[in-house]
Amino acid sequence: MSRKYRHIETAVIHEGYDSKDMLGSLATPLFQTSTYAFDSAEQGERRFAGEEDGYIYSRLGNPTVAVLEERIAALEGGERGLAFGSGMAAISAVLIALTKANDHVLCSEGLYGCTFGLLSMMKEKYNISSDFSAMESKEEIRALIRPETTCIYVETPINPTMKLIDLEMVAAVAKEYQIPVVVDNTFSSPYLQRPLELGCDVVIHSATKYIGGHGDVIAGLVVGKKEFLDGVAMTTQKDIGGIISPFDAWLLIRGLKTLPVRMDRHCDNAEKLFERLRQHPKVANIYFPGDVDSPDDAIYQKQMKRGGGMISFEIDGTKEDAQELMNTLKFVKIAVSLGDAETLIEHPATMTHAVVPEEARGKMGITDQLIRLSVGLEAWEDIWTDLEQALNKLKVHV
Ligand code: LCS
Image (tube, rainbow, N blue to C red; front, side):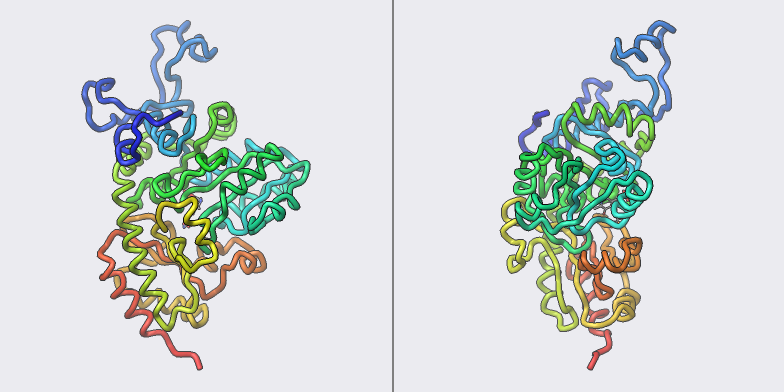
């Protein structure tokens, strides 16, 4: 599907909805209904047989959810969108749709902890194996592709190390083998990065994060080709059933309207904090996609509009020092999740990525000293004052 509105700032507000169709209601109406009454038994039969368009039951479709699905498809530049009850419901629906027993998935070296957990379960139950690769060159990817590889799955920026993967390069190799590339675009949102435009096939979001933006919804979204998503809708969405509630879809439609405004503020704040954090003597290493000195800068320049609102840094100290730093903060909240108005801080090794075995965590670059910051929408000066006082209180190791 092509976008009706060229500018994303307009599309987030208008795509997929016309108030003329809904009695002039400016806000998208909330269809909080589980089922739909048929005019007759014969109409019910026709709907079930697919001979007549119309709603049947809200696990199969809902008008509020449909607006959200059309809007996200337009924002990512895809043919169809599907909404789910969580990012993990979206990821599992896509991965299960793309694999069968004994297949192989090639992944970026670094994935959200529960995605890693899902792949481990798929290996245990169905012998679907996975390899993890830094994906720094075409040769490296080609060397890991097997006849049974049915999917390439990447996060970029990677949670929580912020490493970047060159999506255009990965998509070009995948095309040689006709393997679909699935991209988790949660950290960027379509405002900062659009993987389908770079040749990838499927985009996934934990909409819990920047899409919702207010820390009050758990949801997931998928965008891709109509043929593939029609299949997902009728199998791993309908029959596994991890659908979104109409109210949560309504909240996402509301949140999406301010996505570009919020993202610019997240980016402005993160840029200011990155500059200050990197100069602090207690910060040993810092990872931020917008870092022009990063080895990933060429990829960043190619595929991202701005650096986003996520920063990770290693402190000069121990795990206990990292925890002490977090405990000393005054208003920055110790919480997982990200992309909210509030600045959130977490410790990946013991929280979001605790399920990843220590050795794999090490390969992903998740050390005990690594702290992840989701920069919120507050005044950056206030966030810095809080971080600085906590950093200054850290013990000096000699
Ligand atoms: N993909 C990424 C990149 C994520 O960061 C998360 C959740 C998910 C998928 C799963 O989405 P959910 O089911 O939670 O909507 N990430 C979290 C995090 O970093 N902290 O808490 C949750």
